[in-house]
Image 1 (spheres, rainbow, N blue to C red):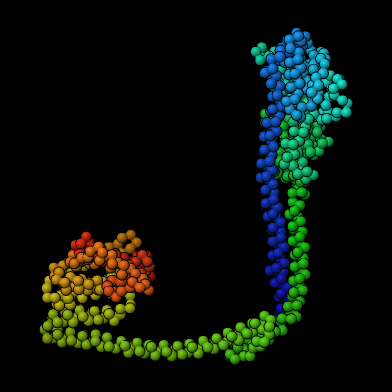
Image 2 (cartoon, helix red, strand yellow; image 1 turned 45 degrees about the vertical axis):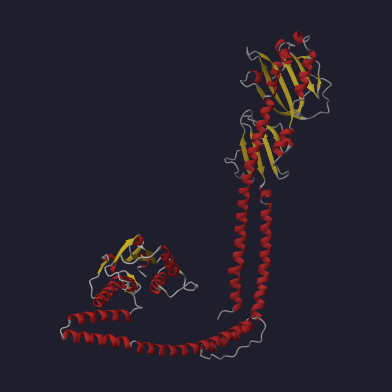
Length: 593
């Protein structure tokens, strides 16, 4: 026999320890997937919003020089050159250049190059520099690229701010990293090249847009142009340089939100005009993303180890303290199995074993009382069966006596008496088994026998018809549901002087229900009388409105509802004052029952 201690250890492993650690593992992976899914959805929305804001912001920057066309004084300088327009409205020209500088707070420096005269002006810190000739300006690589491009603008990667005109306006201490946008000015009518506006903007606005959804020291972002130069990055050391190859591998992950080789989650979006083919990248460290998940898993593992230790300790205590009283209780149960129903139980213990012994003792007392009660009930049941057999002697004796009288009438050549006695004996036989199952056919035969007796009673030709389809004759129904309705016909028609009334019995199938209809063209009812009759018939038995009047109709209705369901019963109709109709509604879906 295996020890309880070993069984408890196995149960602890199978039902507590193993399921617990499996649940910890499943919860860890499920939580990890949920966190990752949430991060994917959240970051995707953030990336979409940030991308749209970047596109909108840079679109505003590169299209800012178009405002120049709305300033006729400043635009005239580009068209005619500084020398020819110098005496027209110099103050408005200076004001226009300074106003252009002040249009965005992130603009650090603006350079105006006027091709007519090869002269440049710069605005720094709202201070306009003096005019400086730049005959070699168009030879610069970035300017050559802009002029030969179909685009009206060119964006240079970030770099330290330059002193374009070598003026004292820009101090040497200013080492701001700026993004430069060159925009060429053209004559809209002749498409003639007029000059270039160069705008240096700091990266503060771009930083606010990209870092808005960023968790510092846990996530990184990077914005690179189409040539792979870093426009902005969380790591300031990367700004203005080519994207490192190791970081480029993460960016080149095929699907958005996929894992990089080191487990980080990478989100990458390609931006559109005016910064076509720029890449906006967000990298979420897996170490940060699943930090709370891992902490929860470690906590659960520690709790699991504690549970194991406590479980082993619990098994030792249980095996030492509880197994002995359990064995004693087992011996008592075995003695009961051997037939000792009065085994002694110790009901003085205050623990669970004592409670169990008290319950077993109470159970044995109830069993003993139940055995005594069942024995007495069996004796009483046999007495009742004997009384029931005796009570059947009288109807059987009467039925046999009627059969003997019928035989004497037949020998005495009195066929009418024989017919009447035979009809009565059929009715007696049917009434003896009134609680047994009946069919539509047996109910119809019983009614026909009743008609035979009524024909002799009234000694007159009355009209009746029974039209029941063969399809419903075998359908089971409660017994004695048609005869009371026929009896009502003789009571309310013939007894009240309507000897020429006609009784009709027919059946039909309507959907899922069989209808048995008993109707006559004799006496009818008023609307108030019909309403009162319905209230009495449909009233529940336990209500005070219940009446013994019309008990036959109510008895049939209640029996149909009880035998089938609430959809069964009787329906009454006065046939528009031309008679009276009773319709028995019986569900067909109870046929097999």
